[in-house]
Every structure is written in structure tokens, then in C-alpha cells.
Length: 118
Image (cartoon, rainbow, N blue to C red; front, top):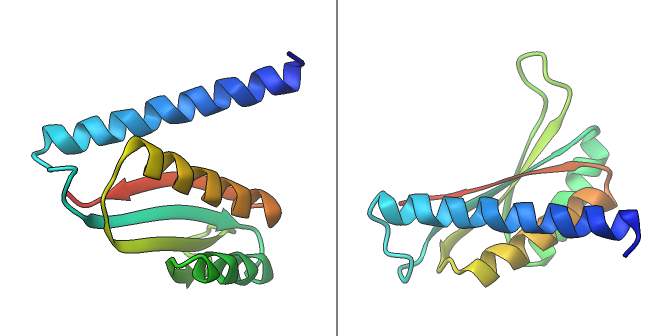
């Protein structure tokens, strides 16, 4: 395995653990993961154009999207992808993370993670 492949594998494993930690925290807070819930995914981009192109990709994939310009001395544009009623599983979270990572990479942005309602 090349060093780049090793880094990619380690990053994916770390993401899986992070996702499991969030799912565990939701269950500890009383969430029934068999019930649909509101899920938010946060991506950031350096330009307005990149943010709106990323938002178009997210919307085309069925996500409800909000775009917010830089605030409070920040330079990045926030693109918030949301589903209002999603049943969370390790697989659905992994698929969503892969999607948002790919969109962020395509438009030279950063995927910062997700959260869900309890």
C-alpha cells in the first residue's frame, strides 16, 4: 500500500469512528435511531462561486441547501446541506460523508462534519 493509500485508509477509519461517536452520543441522549430526524452537513468554500456550484450539486442530489456568506471576520462561505427526515445508520452516514467530501474536494472546499436532532 502506498503512503497516499495508507493516509486515505486512516482518514476513512477516523471518520468512521467519529461518525460512530456521534451516533452513540445521539443514542445516549435518548434518540431512537430507527426514527427519522433532521440532519445537517457543513461544508465551507473560499468563494461565492464555488459555494453556489457546490450547492447546486447538493440540491441535484436531493439535499435541501442553504448558502451563507462570510460573517464575523471569516473568509469562508458556508453551504449547509440538510435532510429533514433521515433514518441514521452507519452506512447512510458514511455515504453522506463520502458525498459531501467529494463535493468539497471538487470545489476546493472543506467538509467539516455533520449533526442531527435528537
